[in-house]
Each structure stands twice: as structure tokens, then as C-alpha cells.
Image (tube, rainbow, N blue to C red; front, side, top):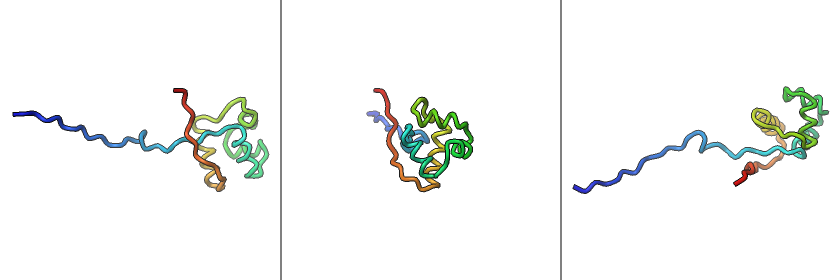
Length: 92
């Protein structure tokens, strides 16, 4: 009797369903803060971070990572800040 190979059924996982991450750079962080009409100190307090951190982001010395990106996305969406979702750059 010939055997047939059964195709393995795969289901999408949480990782495969994730939306592309928005990449926050210095100009976009500053644009969001100015859109909200907040000083760096006020913006930092809203985000739960230090004013120095916001300054680093806006100067391009550091970029938001992890939870900071999620919080920035939530703040931007709630404020109806117009930003485009851009796929995160990868070094292939």
C-alpha cells in the first residue's frame, strides 16, 4: 500500500500576527511632544520617564526601546497624532 505524506497543518502564532512596529526617531518624538504642546519635562512626566531621557531621544543620542515604544504608540493614537507605521529596519 502506498503511503502518502500528510501535510502538517500550521496555525498562526502570536508572533506571526504582530503588526509592524513603529520606529521612533528623534524628529518623530519631538513632533509628538510639540503636537501635544508639552515641554520635555511635562512630556517625560506623562510617559513616566526622565526629562533627560526625552532630551536624549530628541537629540538622537538614544532611541526609545521596548515599553517606551509601546507607550509612545498609545499616546500618539490617543492624541490622534498622524504617524505612519513603518517596518523596523533590519540588517540582513
